[in-house]
Image (cartoon, rainbow, N blue to C red; front, side, top):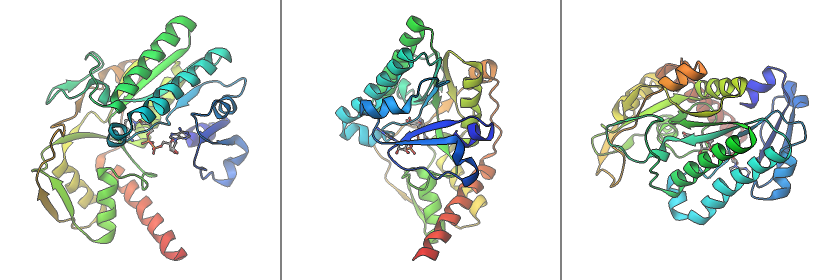
Length: 295
Ligand SMILES: NC(=O)c1ccc[n+]([C@@H]2O[C@H](COP(=O)([O-])OP(=O)(O)OC[C@H]3O[C@@H](n4cnc5c(N)ncnc54)[C@H](O)[C@@H]3O)[C@@H](O)[C@H]2O)c1
């Protein structure tokens, strides 16, 4: 997102506890506020007077971690969002985009997820995001802030080597020339959306000052075995599979409908899976190359 804004010549303030890497040519446009968003002073510094809007991506993003640490998840996901909305209200910031999730609707088996389903989250992660969506709605209704909640499916792309989700695990296995474990028969399906398509959706919401909720995915669900096949195609690696017993409680499918985003945001995902996976593979190989030069 930062790259998309600075390429348009727009200045950006990043708030993150981790220092971002900013290419030299864009540094004059980027300010980094280092710290914890749970700290009100950090939030104050993160929303300078005259800000055009807030894109709120920071969160406890791991479902498992949220189950282990519900109180921290409440503080980091919900209270931080409320604090930022409050600053938006006080400082006259006109738009607010939240990274939400389809986990707000819980497990609907093989049904299709759309914005029309009731909110029925099953974890602290999903419930804090659902509660954030409600806060956005209230701040929009009472104060006229254009608030957008974008419910992302599984995002992949360059910059995910710190993650422990399935795509990075496959990439690490491919780099090491190892195999992977698959829970059950690997027929469980997911929707993988490339980061460039996610950036397109956020940019469209921002530009339109869109007020509402939209599901953002690729619109194509694929099985775990199909994903592995695509990673083999993108990396040229064998990636042998060992099937291990299925995990209890794993969702059998994530199938989403993206018609609302198409209609109301002009969203049109256009990264093909194998092409998108190549961007992740290149990123992993670059990082690996840098690591072996350093060691
Ligand atoms: N990645 C996905 O597949 C996916 C799917 C659905 C929704 N989302 C949502 O999108 C957003 C971004 O996800 P991501 O995968 O890029 O996450 P990430 O963990 O890779 O990035 C989050 C960033 O926020 C920073 N951060 C988090 N909490 C902070 C805090 N309290 N103070 C300061 N900095 C903090 C982290 O240092 C990190 O740089 C999250 O809100 C997540 O819930 C992601």
